[in-house]
Image 1 (spheres, rainbow, N blue to C red):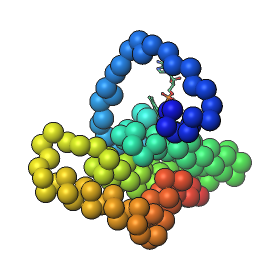
Image 2: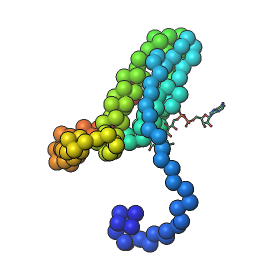
Image 3: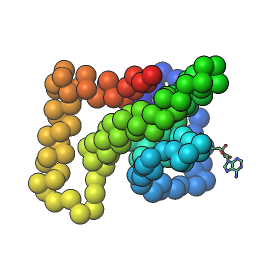
Length: 148
Ligand SMILES: Cc1cc2nc3c(=O)[nH]c(=O)nc-3n(C[C@H](O)[C@H](O)[C@H](O)COP(=O)(O)OP(=O)(O)OC[C@H]3O[C@@H](n4cnc5c(N)ncnc54)[C@H](O)[C@@H]3O)c2cc1C
């Protein structure tokens, strides 16, 4: 933090009272609906925090669901509700891919060998030196559009 703030602001240090390693895991519930029961957010999908996608996906699910419920209540349409799961899952799997990719690029795995480590460094080098790679990372990091 001191390095990041460049010494321009005073940073008051406190005692670290607790440290925790968060277990990383991934899952997706498919489909995300059963009859009139609709799952949204973490109840339907978890991804490692590396991509910062959990809340973004939860909000996207709810936007899709709110539009579908509104269309059903206002005009009796059922098609959006019926497609809720497949609409959300398209985005969910892209976010799972991105979170997995970020995790394997940034984290060291105890079973990795010298080849894995060099490949990882090659990937990082590519991301910071290629506009195409950086654009792809930025597009996914900012968040893909919510389908209607
Ligand atoms: C440390 C940390 C950092 C994170 N950083 C990011 C980030 O940078 N970007 C990002 O996009 N996501 C991030 N996430 C993930 C994000 O917080 C979650 O994906 C998101 O909050 C999921 O929303 P949700 O509504 O599905 O679940 P929740 O936010 O967990 O909401 C569920 C709610 O249900 C309540 N509840 C549970 N059981 C019951 C019950 N029986 N009756 C009534 N209420 C109940 C809970 O109290 C809770 O309020 C982070 C998560 C953590 C833990």
